Length: 379
Image: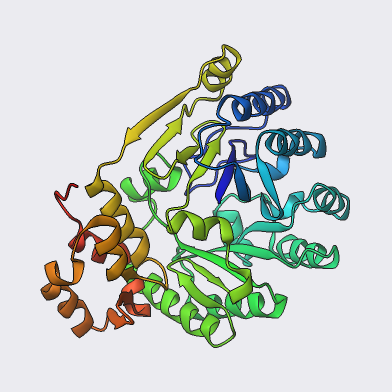
């Protein structure tokens, strides 16, 4: 079992919190699709298996691709890999790209899961983020997808936005429940250097993120969703059991995947790598028969730390038996004091031989993981 990720680095606008600066260019988009098709052939032997269970069109904005462009990529994948008949095929889409016609086209191509980038149901917040859609379009896009017969839908939300009150956030959550979507990915706004928001905060034109408000919104969301059947199975992901993202769950569990397109990352089960990020340079390399791919050889310590980091972010936590069998490392014995400390603080619990973070601990998952990182453990 393995997955395929296709990165489509095009966007209509640069959001203030994002460092994504590629713009739409019809000619360049066509060249990029041709390059991705060629890369599929060049890297058909990268994965340890030909069996593909998930395909994910991410970005950027893959909903800018035409039916023929998506079909071209899928046909190439099916000609070089054994794509499961029931494979999860996800397309990220902006609400303003979703119409009844394109929904029919996507369904005819085998796309059976949509990830809709709503971000907020508040017009003032959408304007602040420089999003192209409004709240009405956000609601309409989900309804249209459901009416088209696509039930496997996830929406993106952002919390911790400037000026977002807890009452407004609770209204946002109520709208999600009213729409009856089976999956939500919710992310805390972060300030990254190189973005407009990062520049404004550095210059004092915008306030830094209010961590207390963001934490309150996070905990409120966890409670509301859990009470309404949306389980938090990863720090930022909530879903009904049968609607967990198979593709992302595979990432977190260390399943190999092939990334295609500029800046796409890949993992063959032992090593990671990434493509050139520059669109023209990537296209030029592919056309010359080269693979614009840099490999990072992962040591046992690297893989051990990755397991700790990803495991703590999920509902499955860290499995002590897996640590012993896969890495010959007795995690429970080595970190007894740290484990006891975070349990005492109410940030974690021991469940069937697994260390699992509580809802309070999940908000601190990355910081807790850093306390467990191994400096040197080799076979």
